[in-house]
Length: 178
Ligand SMILES: Nc1ncnc2c1ncn2[C@@H]1O[C@H](COP(=O)(O)OP(=O)(O)O)[C@@H](O)[C@H]1O
Ligand SMILES: O=C(O)C1=C[C@@H](OP(=O)(O)O)[C@@H](O)[C@H](O)C1
Ligand SMILES: [Mg+2]
Image (cartoon, rainbow, N blue to C red; front, side, top):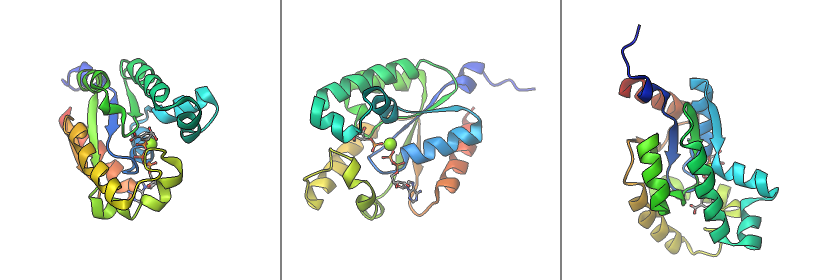
């Protein structure tokens, strides 16, 4: 028997954080462990357009991408029991941020700049926002963007942890929170 309020139990989980911290990978792992559906907002947009995010930015522009991002997040964050990974720029839009914070459990995945920069080569080709920036400019963006992630329910430090270790910690945290 449990006396946990069903509303909290049923809430969807939303992962936020800078590009490359692992929102997609960890979101998928957490969804598996919790036996929930996983939704990656970038993948939903790519499915609709049938092209990559980079191509969407190049052909249609960032504004169209951001509109789609808002539409998909608004739809999914109102659904119960999902695990949703949003793109690192989603919380630039206050409407998305406020909606996620009111409807879902928002988990901020954090990686230090030192650890993050080791991952840059893995993601540079598929992240149009990073293209053409010097390392110094990327560092500035990394730190400026931390402000938009400051509003969250839970924060998880991920330095030096495997995907599985992080996912286990998150499942633990969620169970303690509920
Ligand atoms: N904890 C981790 N340790 C090592 N590599 C990781 C970890 N989490 C994610 N990665 C790798 O980092 C890259 C970016 O991960 P991804 O899930 O796409 O991040 P995001 O969705 O936040 O942009 C991928 O190549 C992924 O395999
Ligand atoms: O931070 C951003 O502005 C973006 C992050 C990307 O998602 P990830 O955070 O999953 O890389 C993707 O939505 C797009 O390339 C824009
Ligand atoms: Mg992602």
